[in-house]
Length: 158
Image (cartoon, rainbow, N blue to C red; front, side):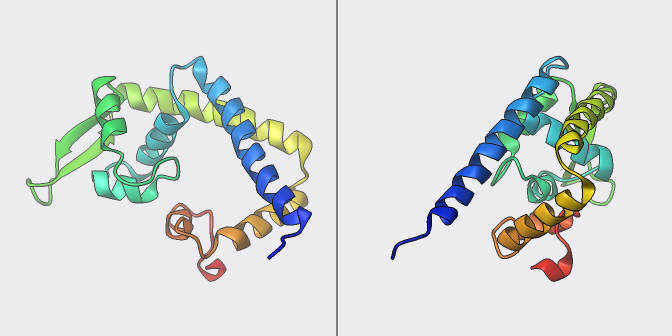
């Protein structure tokens, strides 16, 4: 089966956009000494406050599977702490330390800077259209549940 050049073009434009966006974000985060994966973990814990490793893993877009190595490093660096669950002492919850909370504010500034760059290129209506098309593409993917939990996909989109 022969696919159209537009399908291939779409594939590579999406890949290039993701890579370029990640480069920009990584550069914005470099001054605060955080990687994009660490930033995602910090921002999720900032929003959800306390999560188990499994719960956190189910919300991450940057990594598939268990984020245990990433979390181990972040605990060692002082951004996250492990604590026994108040519901069941057999379970461990993760939460931000004071340093992690401080970094969250710095990450938010970097995110806002990136969002301002994007808003200089696209009008809100254009972003809504792009988001609609990308949502259609991702709605039946392995990422749809994670995207829905994070509020990036609507229930009816998948």
